[in-house]
Image 1: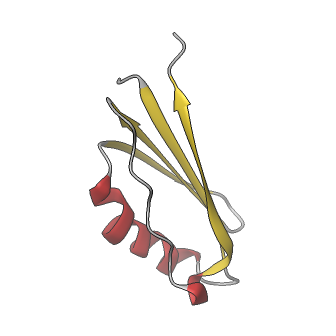
Image 2: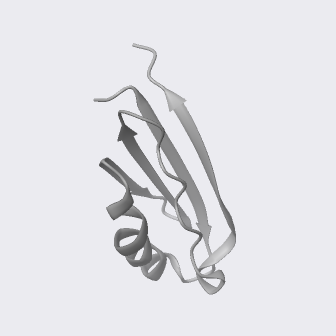
Length: 79
């Protein structure tokens, strides 16, 4: 795996997690390299992407799909 990782987390609006996951697959995943996509049993969607350089800012989902705006962090691989 590469030296940088991006973690992007968003909380879905009530009942919107399936549609939010579809939006993430269509609009966010193609902007990333190697991707891991997760969902919680409740309402969270987390994307972790691995990059060799600075990862891109991911787009903001449509407001009707989210309970709050996404959060994004960049990490450097330690070991």
